[in-house]
Amino acid sequence: MLLEIKSAGEPVLREKARDLTRDEILSSTIQQLIENMRETMHKAPGVGLAAPQVGLGLRLAVIEDKAEYMKEIRPEVLKERERRPVPFEVIVNPKLALESAADADFFEGCLSVAGWTALVLRAGQVRVDCLDHRGQPKTIQAAGWFARILQHEIDHLNGTLYVDRMEARSFCTLDNYSKHWKDVPLAEVRRRLAMDV
Ligand code: ZN
Image 1 (cartoon, rainbow, N blue to C red):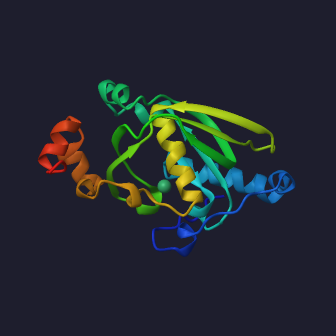
Image 2 (cartoon, protein in one colour):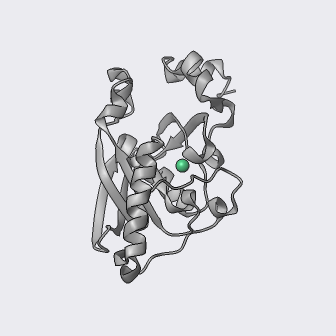
Image 3 (cartoon, protein in one colour):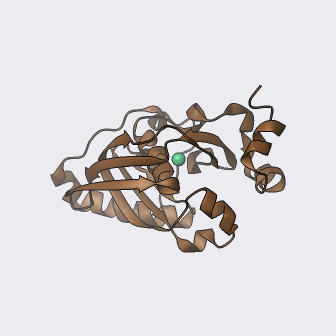
């Protein structure tokens, strides 16, 4: 079943979500929610979806970055972003540790701020300790685009949106991003947007 994706301005997107117990994770309600979130993420399409985005203040998110999403992106860009396919992941009650400085600067977007994108500095490497869809502990070591997705989704569980972290001068519509910025090297983007002055 497809769920309604909440947009910026919905109070739940600004609240700190609560942990789930292992019994809750195993309940049919949460198992069904995970399936519905997966279907909703695929349909959007998006590479991640956090429970607050479907109106629920729970520390739960789903992630999947499919090879088919990368077909339209130039290989140099994929390489620069360290973007590789990520199989379907469920993360519950995650603890995030940044394992590098905020040294990766790329445009990102959000299904709850649809139609817009902006540059966000993120750590290039992270470690996440969490529970999986069966309530079992797991550790994810991630780099590159996957590390960015994890940081973005875990931000949602803390009531944070990427617009809180974005470099505001780079904020633009997806149409204008495709038209003017998509193929421009980052240093040139920063110069033309007068971001370093
Ligand atoms: Zn988002």
